[in-house]
Image (tube, rainbow, N blue to C red; front, side, top):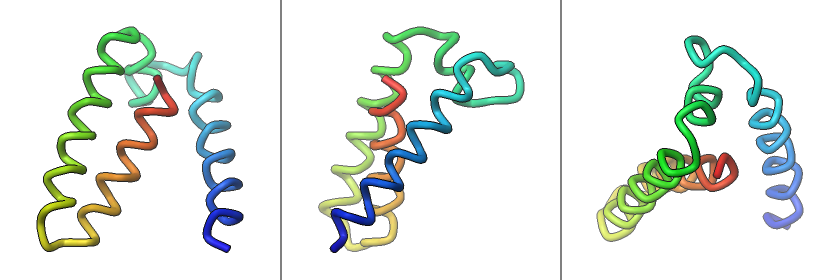
Length: 78
């Protein structure tokens, strides 16, 4: 059941990310990432992965969920 719910959520996130490609980097974090290039996006993805791992070995499931969401977002941007 969770998989079925996740698909539409990721599809919506993908659509939002794509809609921000041409946006003003001064007003859109996503547009700013795109303007900095793939290497910067990959760097941010790596940072989020490390943060997710740190939270994964900690005792704060809510923080892990948040970092996992950040990781998925940066992965989709890349």
